[in-house]
Figure (cartoon, rainbow, N blue to C red):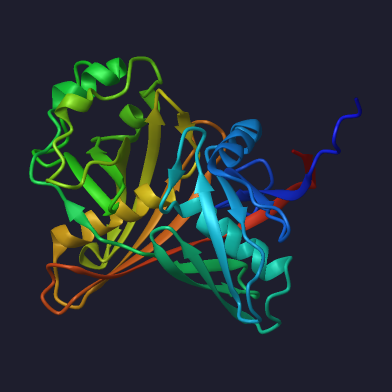
Length: 316
């Protein structure tokens, strides 16, 4: 009996938060055909085949407007939002898909977390995204000893401060334990040995249970009274390895640090370098605008570059 012909889909890969190939964070974008529907299981298997931290499934355009729907998958699950897929998809659509021809192109991505308004500046090569956010700093911190148990290379090191292990959500369904370390040497010494943080110590506020990963950081420098910050970071999660760039975690950290400063209507800018220790340096830009009270986040703008690496056809 003859086998049925396999379906095919086009894909591209990019390195995101970099202008140099083989740096930054790899991303696969699968262009879904208009005449075939893939269920969640097929998308998940495709994401595992690429074996990147995230894979985007880009739906065909439904109108003449520069708006596209995208689904974001890790190796294990679908996410409502993630940073490097957002920036990579915006750069891809602006530079390859020909959605617009102006120097600054406006594109809206429809994600599970809500619409993401993005811009691409052809002159600078930077994409910016006003990302969906529902920032939540959960009441109960994660005990320092639980961090050490999950990351034995930290043994003998005291916590950077009393608030250095807080649980922070950028949107509902996406949370990070932000962990400040005192020096770059301690950041560099981190290894993937150990196990994930014990879920029993992750005390989300009621109704906020979600994907959670540790995000380690060091404040390298501050300017203008803390309104501009240079940060080095790492995201190490035993279940997924080390991530070269985590835009959602960078956004959560930036929102947390901005709220700690809390000036009314202030804008805080962050340059966050990640992936240095693993040889895939990424440069993530985040701006956080606070509201008139200085106690809530009004806007989070994520920015970065991306460079194409490969393209081809996958048989399904």
